[in-house]
Length: 135
Ligand SMILES: [Zn+2]
Ligand SMILES: [Zn+2]
Image (cartoon, rainbow, N blue to C red):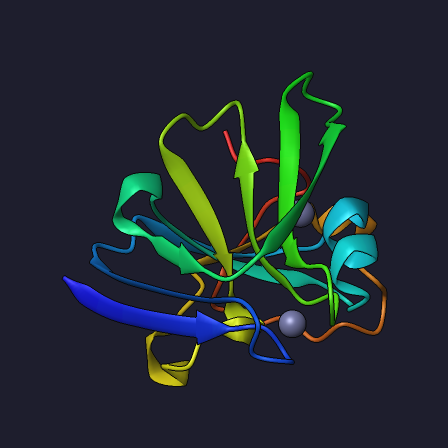
């Protein structure tokens, strides 16, 4: 079990959980780039029901290429995206690494959607690389 706490930039939204990290990835898809305003998104996937979110969140749902619906969960005041859900991954929530307090636990195992990566983005050559979604 790993204790994870996090918050948005302004502090209006925070969350906590003590759970198992199922998977961690660096995602270079254009959705993550636009949603985070960053070169890529780093996500830690945990059980949805383990996470207690405090504060008023705003959600935005949109269809993915896969046909699944993706939901971004963010602070409507400062805009920080704290988490995301995917109808293709029932019961799982992806926590956005940048909002997590415990920096040492953020250990992505792979880079995914590398086909849409920003060319200047450095990637660890020892990490697995997938052109799109793995498997
Ligand atoms: Zn905020
Ligand atoms: Zn992505």
